[in-house]
Image (cartoon, rainbow, N blue to C red):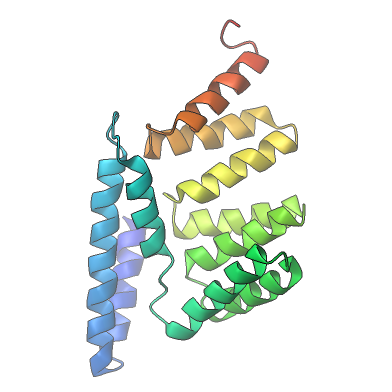
Length: 189
C-alpha cells in the first residue's frame, strides 16, 4: 500500500513538471502494471515459462526512465562482464547517487560488492533494493547466497523461502532450501 502511495506521489510530481512528464508517468504506470501481471503469472506453481517471465520482469526493472541513468547501469554491467569491478562500483555509485529511488542501481552495486567479497556492503545495498522493491527475486537470491557463505543458514533459508513465495517454479531454489533444511536436521537425509 505504501509503495503504491509513493509511486502515485512520484507520478503526480512528474505530471506537473513537463508535458513530456505525462508520457514518462504513463510509461511508469504501464510498466508497474505489467510487472504486477508478470509477478502474478510467476507465482503460479507449475509455470513452465518462468525463466521468460523472470527475464521480462528484470528487463522492466532495468529501465530507470532516464537515458543517462540507464547508460550508467549499462556501463557498470559491461565493466562487470569485463572484470573491471572497481569501475563497475563507480558507475553504480554514480547511479545510486543520482537515482536513489531506482532499485536496480542498488542491486547492481550489491552484485559488484558481492564479486569483491565485500558482503557487508553488498547486504546493505540489497536491503536498500528490497526496501524499494520487495519482490526483487534476484536480490533475495543473492542475499541467500551471501548468508550461506557467511554460515547463517537460518537467514539464508528465510531469503530462499521468500524467493520461493515469489516464484515457486525455480528448481535451484527448492534444492537449496532442501539442502539447508537437511543440514539443519529439519528433514531426513
